[in-house]
Length: 482
Image (cartoon, rainbow, N blue to C red; front, side):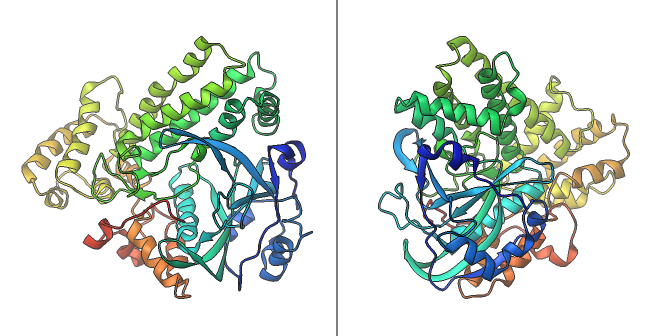
């Protein structure tokens, strides 16, 4: 078993050492055994008695170097230096099967110097949502943090109403955010900023160390991986909800989930966070906000890069995002020979989305239905749309495009069904699992967890999980509260 803590050893003064505070009447509610098998950890460590000893005792293996990281962030566009791990602790890192470092981070660990008068706890509701979505994203092929285990408790915590506290250990390449760099840049702590750069280049981007300009390479890598991530969000109909810079990872992964949502009816300007009154983080604004965040990050590189180099790195964002998005959407429509420069292909994709939007059709159901389409069997697809004439006109153009492709219809269907999920984590499904778990029954959570591990498979025994939400399920209010 491998367990180290290079961040605490090399950057101890970029945060605070804090002991884990055990919640009252805690129990181990779930272990992600598939993820555990991919890490260099002893499976016996995740049996409740031993885990709690190593996690909650002062000199426990997972507690003795626990650290709250310090960072800042632009929240809804406003700079806030008073941030940091207010309820989370970096426990250390292990390795995956490829020998790459993987952070172990405990969320809901109790108060830290950065709690800002909060209780430092996470509630079961938000913990289950993050636990489920990390797994859902991973199996959709969208880079994301994932959760290793879930700890429930009877400790009461007050949010909009009284709830119970929960914890989870989550994993990802690192928990370093845009806000880390921003904080040490804006606070004028150039020595700590440099050590953060050095640590990242050594620990996480070692392939750049021999470069003529590793700082330019690093910024360009972050720009490109962020562009690819957001392209996937848009293609798979995912709204993050709180794209503050302290929620943006330098590794281009989905991170720090709050009021997220997968689209139901296709609505370009969908806002999933009912606290976002101005719609800053609406679905269709995510690509632009990500670029805004990258510009904020780029300021921290200004000690190493001149203005032209910064512009060069940032200029690669939009074309890379558009190219990646076009490729994903072409695959989702089964367009094997689609050309990004061909206006007809772009219009075919755009008109499909416009039709979904105008007729308020379910994003995922519509794509999945299209993935089963073959010429001569138009009725199921046409019947799905309210305006059949509009759908028929689009389908005629689609058939003309398919006729130019070398692959068989069966090959196209198989390829489309491998990128258009039958199952996504709809908010109402998560809510049902939460409500049962709050009553002590984790059965629905565990079923949903298993279904989401195979989002592209038919799994006919779980057809009910693939249905559009009922009306009440479309109007759930999700906020930042956790």
